Length: 190
Image 1: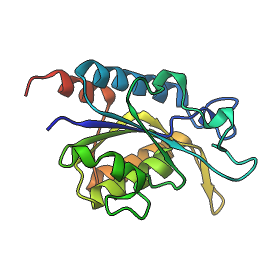
Image 2 (image 1 turned 90 degrees about the vertical axis):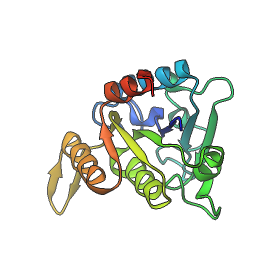
Image 3 (image 1 turned 120 degrees about the vertical axis):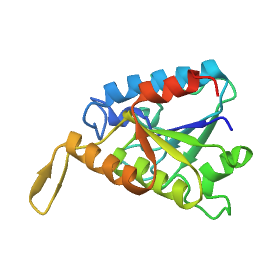
């Protein structure tokens, strides 16, 4: 069965000048754009996920420019757009798994390829939920980005945050591959 591309929260607040810039978001967006182009050229299904926060002044605040999907990966034509309000795009009352699960009902059994922002939050939560719901998941590693974080007085650079979360996902929840490998697989006859 053909894979479905799920692009999670590649929104303007995560870029320089936004309310919560990540480490190297432009590089991740460029790789995500390559992935999106390959899926479009192959005529494969695409789902865009956009987070909307309701708190005034919060990042990804509904109705602000920062909540808009980056133009490099903006939806076109009849591509599905799902709005979420929790880190896990499958969160919700639906038996299919929230808004993303509903959007994927026509593709049950297909593998999904996930890319987006943040590796350490919405990508991580959604990949784990997808796996728990029985989806076969591939994460496009270089089409994701993470922030610098700190805890207990320890600062962790965004590149290390990104690598740690991808390593954890690769250990039990998903295949983790660079965009070039995902695209090559799409272009290889089955």
